[in-house]
Amino acid sequence: MVLEYPYNNFYEMATANAVANPNKKVVFIDDEKITNRELLEKIDAFALYLQQCGFHENEKAALVLPNSLEFLVAVFAVGKLGGVVVPINNMLKRDEITYILNDCDAKILITANEFVKEVSDISTTTKVKETIWIDNLEELKTQNSLHVSKNLDDLAVILYTSGTTGHPKGAMLSYRNIFSNLVGAMKIFDITKKDRFILYLPMFHAFTFSIMMMLPIFADASMVIIKKLLPFSNIIKQTLLKRVTIFLGVPDIYNALIRAKLPWYFLWFNSIRGFISGASALSEDTLNRYTKVFKRAKMLEGYGLSECSPAVCVNSLEHQRAYSVGRALPSYEIKIVDEAMVEVPFGEVGEIIVKGDCVMQGYLNNPQATAQTIINAWLKTGDLGKMDEDGFVYIVDRIKDLIISKGINIYPRQIEEELMKLSYVKLCAVVSKPDIHSGEVPVAFIELEDGADKKAITQMQVKNDLKDTLANFKIPKAVHFVDELPKTATGKLLKRVLKERIKQGEF
Image (cartoon, one colour):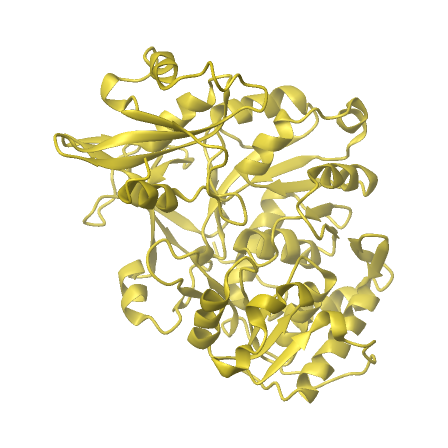
């Protein structure tokens, strides 16, 4: 199957919407409502300002911004001038931001006053020639600026991976890469102009960038931008008041949402027709709770990674399989292979590899890592999974998280699934710990439910509660109770932090 793309670049998309539906409200943020025409005017005005700042075609513009209208405008304005946008995790510290700015050779930094501590005088340690502070910008005049028309295979975005080992790597994504995700998602979720997305996860993240921010514009639908994740009650309120139809999130958010005391009127009057979950796997317990509580909406689990723009596969409204992350998006191919890259039989565990228009152009300035990751156009994901005969994919674990104890494979996710079924467990993570006799053993970290009696729940109780469902060698050799597990900006558990703390003898 060959995908057809209606646009060559982001700016064409915004222009087409402004011509076809100029008065359509496309962005809702606080009490402000922005139409397609107004959005294009803001993009043009900011592009002119960037041009006056000396920004040129093919240069990189880095964004260290909060969720905001300015983030959206900047992405399109940079693209209009033929530049490449580099969204940076706004939770990073000065040295980490400096590394990325130098690695991508950014010439412009677009940021906000709240990040002044981390980015002030950044030009002294990087090649950034201009820092633009969005809070200090006066009303920009709406004028047209230079328009550099880019093609599908031109570089559009560089997304830096979270860097599980060493420095983060910049995944180079073309317009074709991003658009292939949008074309597929449009078909699978049956997105229409009437749909309204809620955007509250960080906009710098791959999942948010493509599926929450770009997809609504691609579909000429609309989005509700939430500036801050907390208080979460505001997200619930805005979902109801702004009549959100597509709710996207990650397991940590969904765990919190389903455990919250949702008001009856929210359950009765919300307009949600689809929940979409990405970033990491939902627990069986959370999935079951959603099915019971939200009768009119489907919870659709998907899977992806920054290197694939990011969506790879997802359940559809018509075809959904419990505990699966669905089937490949249209035109993508997925295989499950062994260490020699040979496909394994259905139902057997192996590494997930992906081929299609979603696969990145490579890692910026890192041909060695690119060659290790992309082999004969197939991208090695580093994730373990299995596939059934109908093409549904099931995530088993990360290859690096696999625990090998006395030569036997132990998948932490299976243990986590059983832990999440325990009434007193709010969140958990299972990691490996070196062991002189077994090589490695599983160790569990648990966040207890808010109402749980923390004095009464012991390590021994947890182990006893797992005895009926797990083989003895899979039961964690130690259980540690923590106030909060370390997570990324989107709520993905940082197991490497836990492993490091074990290594340092903290546990």
